[in-house]
Image 1 (spheres, rainbow, N blue to C red):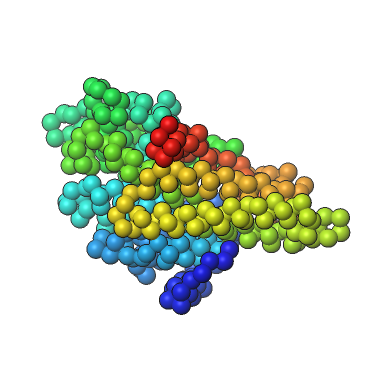
Image 2 (cartoon, one colour):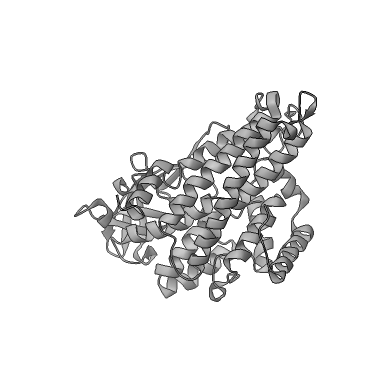
Length: 398
């Protein structure tokens, strides 16, 4: 996808490429390309490499240890890392909690937690959704009662991504039942090593278990782990979700997936000719590429505004809807392109150390797994239906 860049921006792109050529372990890029399961150690290794260069927190200001990059630099970095099949930066500490602490946390919280996020001392996960409070997050029931200088937490969270690796979780908890549901929610930082915390894996349709249930039973959390004010957590949650939804749009991931789709379409044949030359299939690819180019432009506008201190608003909902639909369309076209190789799907073949032989060429193996896994994109972070409601209220004033 071609956009106009300045000489300085092109030089930055060349710098990123050189860094990836030198520092990205081939073992990790191969695992990402073939969609093999990444271990906790894999993620930590890549985070440490980026942090050593000072490139782990692309969306943080320099005063907190971030890069201080502008929107275009972050866009270029995402494009190049996804094209090189680098592991994604695990977003919970860097892209979600970090901005919340910087905006609403106390100075003590910033001084303590932000360096630990960068150094990998803590692995964070997100405690938002509950069985009865997914897109309707204000219905959450996980309760925190004040007991002296602690809160006592009881309840459940679900769909907690990579919670099996985490030692810390940032949670929305109910601290009051008075007034509107949104007015009694607080934002707590909870130690996952507390004996009252239990993590139970949820096996997904693609055979993986990257999400979990998390149960809290009489978990004592120091009051100093409250972010901001008690019962003001809904404000902080919305701030975090706008950043999350912008990230879910995944322009870089979509670009990489589109290039992979084109490569497959050149290798696969239909009626004796490369599939990419089939007019109907080529038209489908062109349609999704045009939509991606338009979304990339919108994404740059939104992250530019965020860089100037403006939290993304309903625009992040627009990006979330369009970005997830585009990525799912690319996944569907990829399955169509690999044809019968998309049918035999053995999830064990994606596990580290598996001896299961893949069926078909190496590019065919991830097609089904990616398709199945990415069906969730239009649901998590607030379902696309909910995002349409946000847009209708915030922009159309309906």
